[in-house]
Amino acid sequence: MKIFNQVKTKIQSSKQFLQKILEDYILFSLDAKQLTLKQKTVLLLCQQAVSGVEKLKSLEPDSQEGLIATIEYKEIQIKVHFTPEKITLNKDCIEGQLRLLNPPQFESDSLVYRCLIASWKMFLGGKIPEGTLPEGVRLESDCIYYTLPRNQLRLLDVLFSSFEDGSVLITKLSQGELIIESSVALSWHKLKVENLLQILQLRF
Image (tube, rainbow, N blue to C red; front, side, top):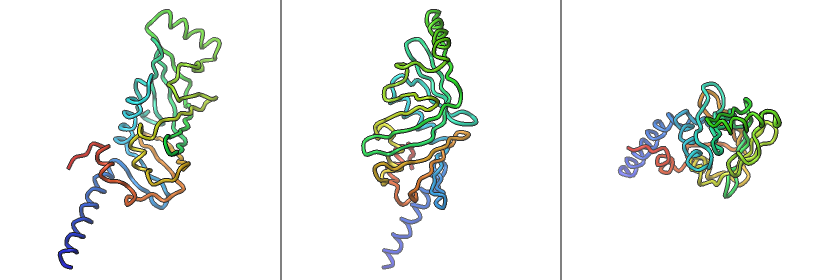
């Protein structure tokens, strides 16, 4: 029994140590049923999105609110400033809703494409034309909707692997940190810690 208790104590200490390390990346607020992804983790999510989404050349947090994405369409760079508002977890995919914070900005080094940009601003009022957004992304008014395979955003898949199909998460991104609220209680005990460490590329 003494040996069993010693092993149990070591396992508990190890879990507490890992939890302390992971708090630099993820914070749980059990009472509010929310978690906060720290800036390091948000940057990792941005990297995963860029590597998996065609036309998306960069994605980074704004210093105050939301994210700034750079989309490349032919020789035109489109900068989009938005904030995430909602995520729906489906069995095979993740659906998200984003809200534009500022009108998109269009840039190009090509004279021909600068003329095209001018015509967009004249006839479309500066809105993003159809066909310029990545596949699976659509724009309606000031909202952007996207659909991505679950395995493309592995971090979210690991964090919410225990959630039921159709679960909805409310999101807010401020000063580089992403706050995620859920109707379901969140806990360290439901996480696959080894998978999370692997995704965060932490070694011990």
